[in-house]
Length: 237
Ligand SMILES: Nc1ncnc2c1ncn2[C@@H]1O[C@H](COP(=O)(O)OP(=O)(O)OP(=O)(O)O)[C@@H](O)[C@H]1O
Ligand SMILES: [Mg+2]
Image (tube, rainbow, N blue to C red):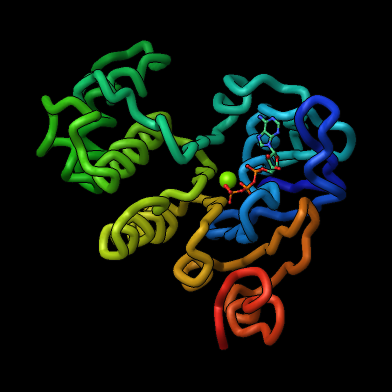
């Protein structure tokens, strides 16, 4: 679905990603792991048109995404959930959902999509009139996911959705991501700090170190890799 070839990207003249090639396949969870500052977020931002691309290509179903603006990329079915500020804290959950559907003209359609999404995320109904800023981190993440779903994306990109969450809540959030794949057939690109948990749910994995890919393949293989797992992911085998 998304094919990245020899991507070189960064911020202004600060070169961060070097010759990155990657395939994000349909209906799979593709996991990107790596140490702090290795360029994981930069890669997601590059797909979403938020960095400077020096060379290489990013295409989705054969359509080139490089050079497009973020809103155009979103229109093509890519949802990007940054780690922070992914809900409007001062608005209620209801208002957040309406904001998410603001580009959809038919408001009855928005309501029907909200109903649909609420089945997967009961929290939407439960906290309908609460200010999103008063929700817990995990609840906010759920609302952010529900908001993204309103626009019926084809691909969802998550940047550390479990960052700062307690282990039990983090598990719930990752469980929802698995559910998105299994029941909606969603294509997912997931960046995670907690490498082990993410690799356990992934179909394909990439290890990014200092802006370069060091591994590509089966997540289980990376998890049990004699050197890489220990060296870069803090996983003892
Ligand atoms: N807007 C920016 N302008 C300039 N440099 C940036 C910008 N954002 C990130 N960087 C730099 O790019 C490099 C890669 O950062 P990035 O956020 O992609 O890493 P990361 O792998 O997501 O790290 P973390 O695990 O800490 O989130 C870092 O050296 C960072 O300082
Ligand atoms: Mg990051």
